[in-house]
Length: 470
Image (cartoon, rainbow, N blue to C red):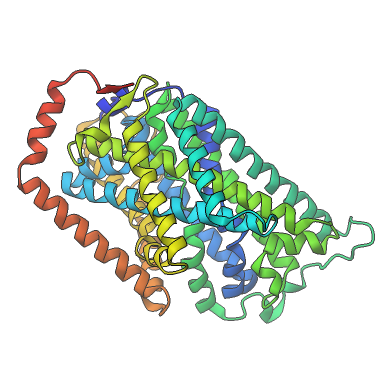
């Protein structure tokens, strides 16, 4: 893993600051999956869901260390797609890149519709389709400005979510310790006896498959590293600070919810609001709804950024139409941004025309994509680190406990896949995702066999300057 900045890294901007990269990684992991979906995990496993979150949290720490090691040595907007290509060949790398891009563009539509749907519960007079369209237009405009402006926008978005979590933890602690006047503490009764794990190991395993997706999005740090002035230092800081903060926020929030809201309670549909209402705080439901809207919009903003950079990288490597590698004078891949958001707009329109028919199918197909991306990251790091050790290459950031911790991460992923294939509800999702991977792999193999990639890469290497557009 030689330390160098790829062509794509030089063509794009390099104005992201370390604090922006750190908050981007933190904000990407703190989304609607925590604010709204955490109740599903508690419903499946009871308070023992904490074990599921600890296992999933351990996995994401290992994945982040692996990505951090590779991104510090070789910052590139293609990130894990590029690293997989270096380790296992261009077909594998392109397959991972396109898989992640498809996941993000589908999720962009889901987040726009989800944020609009939540906001409509507060402002029912506003049409959902109009709000979703406005969200997409505004955040597309943000992504079309310089990466510095995008980073600052996402920084404050993420800071809002972090502030909400910190406030929630403070209220939760006061509630559990009995410090709130006129409100009786629920204590830790939910953690005692059979109530801790009502369905035993099966419930914990089922919840593990559910909660693993809550950490999706942290991998965007490795993509954004290419647009920082000092990638190695920025990635090192982001990896070391994001990881423990994610665990503190996630484990702390889930502990409070599990202690306050019992299994089977209707409050698990909106767990944060249920805790705040138990604390006697008026307007809790509205406040949490607004925070959840901000969380979805923050994720939409970051996912549009990630999708455009992956499309740019694929084009830069000859794996996608060359036009997607065009950059503006502000060093933004304008065509890649517009192409990524276009799919989301079409999906929103189709979903509005055929409610609850189009989007669920698309989400089911790409639902398990993050698990495969994490698997590719660990496998690539395993191969590239062994290669670097053989060649005596110095690395600016090294994953500790190699190769045992990398293998441990792969073992956790194998366990999650096993649980997913056993479950009747999750099996179709995994089969759909694996079918998509097979289709992409065949398409990329045929693309490479045609010889088009080699010719385009050669042409790209002869062009010393990135394509600029006004």
